[in-house]
Length: 225
Image 1: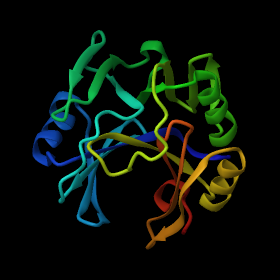
Image 2: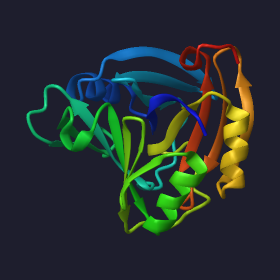
Image 3: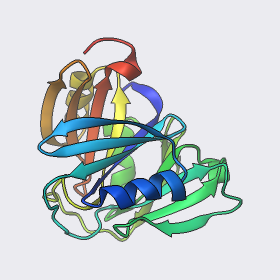
């Protein structure tokens, strides 16, 4: 799988738009980029962390509160953080600001609690195309994924629920990336679909049920979808 940018993005769902926007802009210090409609009463407010995007999905309808999913923490590289600073967003999601370059973190990193670290490491390496840094860390360019044992697999967890819900990898060819991931053991979740002239996207799930978006976004790849 060929990545179209050296970071992955992180998607959060919320019903607390105003409080969350204040948190990400003022507490986390991320510049606001733009808002786009996703359909189904969801607006996506996009915040930049280097070339990574924090996707704040503001849902009109009440979201299910099913507790935290496998993505348990977002680490944000911040030029204003002299040392790691632990925060919680308005929905109780764990967010840690770290100095830029702390443990080689740039942009955004994510901590994933998994039921079987070896299985997850193999999945993200073989199905998604990440590179292993160590037994518990992988990277997509400059984006780091940290694996921590202790989770419980839940293949039926929904995408649209309150909390940190998915990772997005930008690719040059969504259909090829989707087929590769499924052939390597990913659970197909949503077949590739074209969203106007913006992107072609698909979703798969990892062994613990974490949603993973494969996005062929025109503004990233530099070519029409």
